[in-house]
Length: 192
Image 1: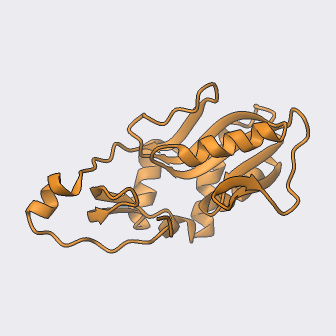
Image 2: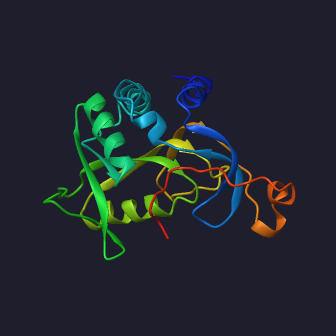
C-alpha cells in the first residue's frame, strides 16, 4: 500500500478525525487518529498488517511484538502475514513487561509493531523488554507516525505506513479555543 492509500483508508473509516481535540498530553489539536475506527474492521487490519509485514519479509523475523492494546491486533495480523509467532507486552504496576508465559530465546529476532506513535515512549519500553529477555529488536513498524519525524529508537530502525505532522497547542495558545470551538468527543485510552 502507498502512503496515500493508507491515508485514504484511514479517512474512509473515520480513523483520521478533524475537530478540536484534547489530547492525553493535555495539548489541543485540530486532528486526531482514532485507530479503533479502522482496527475494528478485520479486513482492513489484515490489509494494513500485510503492508507492514511486506517490508520485513526477508528480515528473518521470528516473533512480532506489540504493546497492549492496539499493538496486540497489529502483532497478531503482522505475525500471521510473516508466518511467525505474535506476542505482546503489557503494563504491570506501571512497568512494561511480558506476562502470560511469553518469553524469547537468546538472539530471537523481533519486529516491534505499534499503532499510533506520538512520542515513541511505549515503543522504547517494548524495545527494552525485548532486549532484557535476550531478543534482538530488528526494527519498529508503525501504522501511523504522528511525531513529525521526532520518534527515534536509537539503533533500532523504524518505518511507518503513514507519516503525519499533527500540530498541537497549549490550551492558552489554542486558536480553536480562541474561536470558541467546543471540544470534539473522541475515544479514550484510559491514560492519565
